[in-house]
Structure formats: C-alpha cells, structure tokens
Image (cartoon, rainbow, N blue to C red; front, side, top):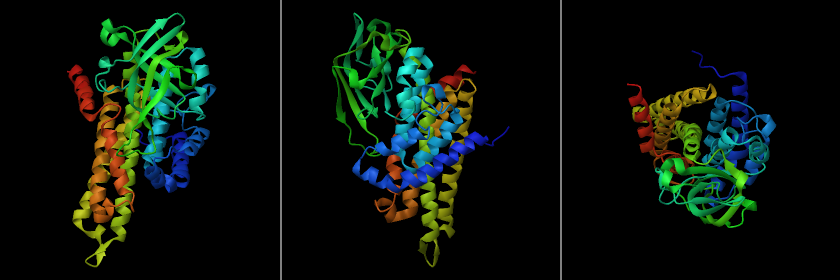
Length: 382
C-alpha cells in the first residue's frame, strides 16, 4: 500500500496550489460579495489544463488521471469554492459524458472548447419537480424530421447562465420510465427556442451562476443525441458517481480553508494572557476538524484511484462525498466558533467557508441519497 502521490500528481497539486494562492485567493472575497463570474480565472484555469484534466490531449485536455483531478480540485476550492465548482462541472458533468458516450465526431466538435477552457459546459438534469427522482422530469425531446424538438425547464443548473454547451437529459419515451430518458449535447448559441431563465440568489458559492434553462420548442440536430435513445439514465448515474468525487474534493478544499483560518486565528488571538490555541477547548475543536478532513481526503483518493483503475466506485464515491461534505460543514461551524464574533463578520473569510460548505451536502446527490447509495451497495455484498 503506497500513500505517496506520483511525481505528476505532486506537480499538478503544486501548480494548482500556487495558482490558487496567487491568482484566486486574493479576489475570492470580492467574487463572493459581488457575485461576479470569474471569467479571467476560468480562462487561466483552461490554459493550465485544469478544465479538462482527465481528457486526452487530442480533445483539448491535459491527459492526466483522476487523482490529479482530485488534488487540483482541493487546491482550487480551498481558495474559492465558486471557482472550484465551475471547474468541477466542466470536468465531471460535461466533459466526462461527452468523452465516455459521444461519437468520435461529437468528441472532436464538443470537447476541445470546454476542455481547453475557451468556453464552459454545464449539465441539465435537475427540474423543479425532479431532483433526487430524475424519472419525474418533465422536459421532453421529440424527434421531428432531422431535429429534436425540446420543451421544458431545468432548475439549479451550475454554469447555466455562462455556459456555451450543455449535456441535457430529457424524456424521449414517457411510457418507459427510467429507460425513456435520453441525453443530448446542446449548443446554446445555436439553439433557437432556448433562453436562460432565473439566475438564483444563493446562500453561498456566489460567484458560480446557478440558473434556469428554458426550452420552448427548441431545436437541436438529430445527431446531437448522446449515445442511444433510452440510455440517458445509465449515463447519468455513472456521470454523477464521478461528479461526487469532484464535489467531495471541493468540500475538502473548503474544510481545509476553514481549518487553516481557525489555526491562524487561534495562534494570534489572546485571552487571559495567552493565545487561545493553548486552551484545551480550542485544541479539541482543531483536532476534530483535522481528523475528519484527513479521513475525508483518504476516502476521496481511494474513490479517485478506483475510478482511474476501472474498478467499481459508486459506493466509495458516495462515501467520499458524504464524509467530505459533512467534515467541511463541521469545520465551517467550528471555525466560526473559534473566531467568535469575528467568525460571524465578513471581515474574515470564515463565514464564507461556512456558507459555501452547506451546498456540498446537497448538490450532485443529497447526503440522504448518498446514504441510500451506500446502503444499496453494502446490502448487495451480503
């Protein structure tokens, strides 16, 4: 058993850390306050290969492994959770299904722009009445000659207001239930009948746009079907498994930022003539935070290793996402407590870390759904 990262993995971890510290961290508070989309950061992440880490170079990516993706995600998210989730969606939810299920023509056309960071991608799955239950979606795609006619509204779509391309889930056969879901590649700029709807005003990850996608008799080419009709649900499950590793990595980055902030403050803040880091009550908080985050990191790396080596990783991805998001939320809560009144004020970043951490327990499968996934897998083993 070898816990050491390879030289390539160390290289991308170090590169992502230096970039995040120099380019992202200094503007993270401003991005959160203004809700500004960090277009310049996205471009630079693309130039560094961070927007298509696991995609082969022939399609515009960096051609690295899933552990490289995880360690890079941790570093970017540690500086800014919004930048982290933008990167995660492009890598996990857009690039992955296009690469895994697309034809060679689709990969040549629709991967390089996103994998190279020139434009952004998104994943159109969730609807107002279909979150944890995708079979309840109302969006439909009907074949009309050489085009698909799409109608419906997607909700809570990360990058939805700034993306150029989308992998979209829609019902092509209502009578078939889950087997009636299909996936499509949509070019927003060349899709009549499409528009961006409401952009949500959120608790956290404020520099990451979360939007409605509105399709009213929208038309896309027949050849933009991803895979075969009815394969969308299976594609979705595999895509979300990998996406959960990305969100677990985002959560870990947020938690690490909270821990570092608490450590720094506890060493500088004095009460009763000594730094509060000398008090057992504070030390135990720091110890719990560090232990939970280290455990989450090991689970993330295990899941990423399994994915990289072509092994079954659904359970391990769910465990990593559950553990890391809970650890991040706990770190944010305790971090605010360590800072006391300052933790509740925007003068410090701790309250931002707490707000950003919460969403990691919700999106790409709530932690309640993660427990269902884990239980389903362990019951199969008995």
